[in-house]
Length: 174
Image (cartoon, rainbow, N blue to C red):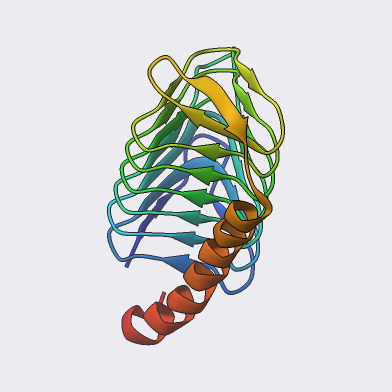
């Protein structure tokens, strides 16, 4: 069973049909929308401020979400895919984004709707990414606009994780 811990006056709140992997960790002021999923080894630590995850968003294996006290909060929209090992720290990710494996998005950065952050990219503090941007590199740079095909693939990935989470709920019971 996942580790779901209250912290201070806050306890994680889960929407309907959420999947939590048995070794996922949620602490404090964390809210998951309907059909969201948090996969193996992922940590969402809302001990010093809020973390909000929209419906149908998936937080993949070993991802880490946190924030800086008094400086930022972490807000993730609907239908977002957060890749394996990504770090999201006090940022805003709008609907329909793909955050690539091993990428890092830092305090008060804003990722516009439908954007793709490539694997291994580093989005520095306060960077604002326009909607439907393809972003690569360290430090991150917008390299072009996301194509319609890429946008559809990103949303299909989010749907895939909703379906896969249903299967895992049958296996893991969570």
